[in-house]
Length: 179
Image 1 (spheres, helix red, strand yellow):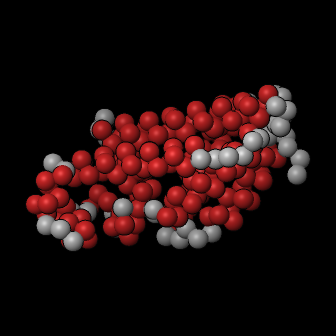
Image 2: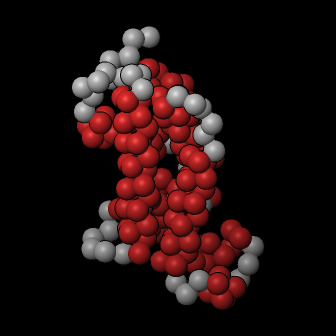
């Protein structure tokens, strides 16, 4: 993951990975049969870690939980900037791959979490009663993905926490919440 933070994951070799880990290439192959298995393990860990962080959100109100989820996601990306490079790279692969299936599963689970919180916020009267939860879910995810893509483009993740707070404020307003 550290190598992917500053290198194109698609061009990384198992030799580079072994060198960065301080082991022989043979040692890497004792644990992983090929590079796809390495990326699969990284993405499985990513899913587990993000879900653990989302599960740790403690806010009582649905909108506050969404805001905490956004902050947790941003903190994760800042801590592991190589993960988005790997994730987006795997999504660009043609056809079905184990890694692409993991990423799709992560996105499906994330979408369900967000939709559940938005539905709860609507039911609790936190947002407008006529809120299109499906569209609002897409908007939330697009907000996260857009921030990550822009940070990747300039190779600087430091502005993400402040930007996330500003964007969430706009997101709340789009749901009919007055500041």
